Length: 305
Image (cartoon, rainbow, N blue to C red; front, top):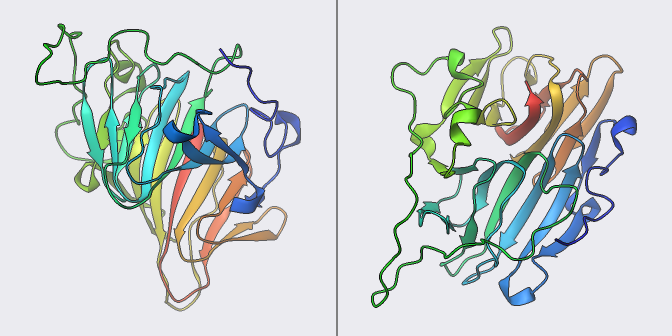
């Protein structure tokens, strides 16, 4: 295992000194992973606290990252640009994830990413509660034989899998906290990952006085990720209701310019595309759209809403 960098768990602030801040790409912790360039992806870490790890990574055309990876937390991908192909070497599962889709990797799930296209692929992600154990980074990859197909090589029997299935029946806000499946159920061995396409998102109307469209991608006991949309126009700037979370939040702006207002201090922050606003647990905030176009962002919260 490789030693963890000192900033893991302490960026942009140590746990006892957190405050709201906008983090631009130039202010991120930038690194390649793994450290062999031809089998690596490029990473921008926006935040690594005692509650989550928030980052964006990029795979260039034709590249895969190697070796396969595994984490000590649930991991949720949101594809911002391009097409991502994911392999679970333990089960042989392959998923192709397109732009605006999500890929859910429960804790303990092995995964390896490929870009089979001629365009770059960029992914925004959260891992919670920890990206790696305190003893350090994995170095050897998947410990068994990867279940990769070959025409001239028979596959050994694989583990008995249990695919994750979406709940049946009406999709109501009662499913928040167990979407697309309850966390402990998703983490059963062997761990299976799940593609969350547009049809699989849990859409809810958030707020009565200030209604906002919120689409949950994953929501469980460890992590929550959702798209939200602040419309433009009306008799005043469009906004969300003021709220706080029982966990740290990072909101990544995909489109438009988002303003975050903090009613208890009267402070405000502007967040532009490919920037992240970090908001510590318990701090009330409100999203506002002062522009003439819809603002689209992805919010990630851990551990509690």
